[in-house]
Length: 236
Image 1 (tube, rainbow, N blue to C red):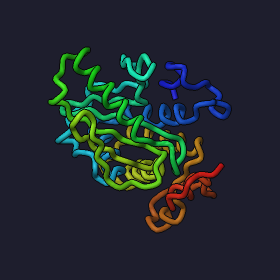
Image 2 (image 1 turned 135 degrees about the vertical axis):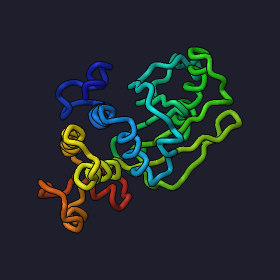
Image 3 (image 1 turned 90 degrees about the vertical axis):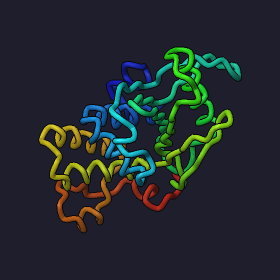
Image 4 (image 1 turned 90 degrees about the horizontal axis):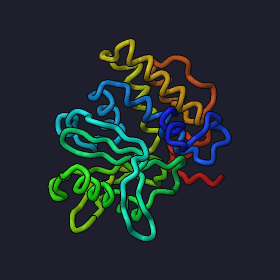
């Protein structure tokens, strides 16, 4: 949430924000970034159904930027701001987040953000375009999560589509099932789970009962959780 406030994307009152997806993104990814690089990436990797590269192929995280303004003079716009840009040793990950499933993600926005990042890397960081390995994670706003390739300036870039609910389940799985989760990591992950609950995403009750390992299961499921599970649009 801190990143959204600092970038004037949200106020302290998230219940009345006009941009709830920015507050959600900042709250979840903003907390995930405090986990060790390999843990952060492993959670994303598993939540993506292993469509993202393994940590050994992606490399350590060098920088995480929220709403980085990238100069891009096209279609009457001055700049492009991907929700999150993660610079790793061996690749780049753009995260474009939407609040609800059932729609919101679209190819034109992905295309624009990849082009802007390529231009930024070439002009600001002196990195040749043809050497850049870029993935785009479409988080939320999806009716399905099948694999997708987007051709941008003659080159194909992987688009990984993910539901927020899937990410929550992986965070909770790591928190309560992983023997390698340290006490410090567990405190961070519990705050991530609480942040999800604040935005009305809850761990799936019947999966918790099957696992038999989770504690403090919420008494109810939010409508957003049910919509996500069955990949139904949100008609609110």
